[in-house]
Length: 463
Image (tube, rainbow, N blue to C red; front, side, top):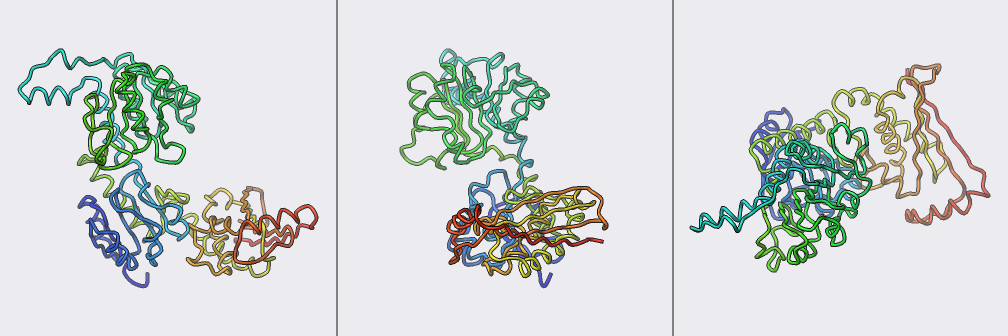
């Protein structure tokens, strides 16, 4: 390091996390929660690392002013307040802490379900108002009810365990959940969200916020649930079509809804939820336990510190994650791979349509994604991009130039202990000018059938 590393903590995290950073030699920490966007943009250019929760928005404009920024750490799971595309383009690693608040969020979602089923908040308010309305707050039992779980990551899995202990009949939909995993969890596996929701008495959501999951519970899907069904969302706002849900509550199709997250937070004036009696609402409290705050604060501080100090990458959402041991195995090859990429850019054909990286020998058994990124970064240095190509943004930069990327590994014996082979391929003449990837690709496709493919392989033994 040429000087101290500067880390800005822009949202509150646990004191233990801040203390961990301050105890690290060569690291200087500033804790500045609650900064307005304009104030943050004025100072962000002097920081190497940024730690946020959900309050601070890491926008494209902010990243463009963050000349030194190398890593953004999100103390929590959701990263929808961070522009991932812009972070990747600027070569900034984005990390989160998916495990730190798992139990707290699962327990909160379960508490919302119980409160909804037995109308506990409404009964409490009635008693404290001096009333005794036993008949008004009749609830429903959860035992034997069909529970649909959309999203079976860490939190959905913990919710399922608790639901099974209550005797619920759980069915889950998650495109990444295997049949064997579902069987081991003792839950049924649905082939689609619709299949999971058909006839469900309760649905709980544990999904990220994406274009695909926006309003995944729309009116059509809500109508698939059994009349009187309950909905619980302790994941991300926008998963439920709130206007449709309120209409179906008023019509009696839904029996109740419990929300810890909302499409707009806090709910604005005129929200469909104001005045709703068969609802339970909390202000985004899923991870708000002392234990979760302590865990995620320490976890994100350690991840950001380790990345800046020794390059280890844990829980990254925009590049491969490698723990310290894996990084130690890969690190010796990264400088070599980058140098090899630079050399290929000098002796190979430019512009290039495809770049292939092949590993053989014992090198093929390590995590090769980062060495391939290093080859790309070296290869693209000659293009003079700003920000410069690095391990984070190299694949995106290559794709923007119309360069196909391929990787292969083989443990076949070679004359050397290990070998890296880089091949650049040019399919034919291309139109030039201004980095227009679509024109490059069109020209490549037009000449693919008529031109001779030129391949320029370069092998490098690693002794």
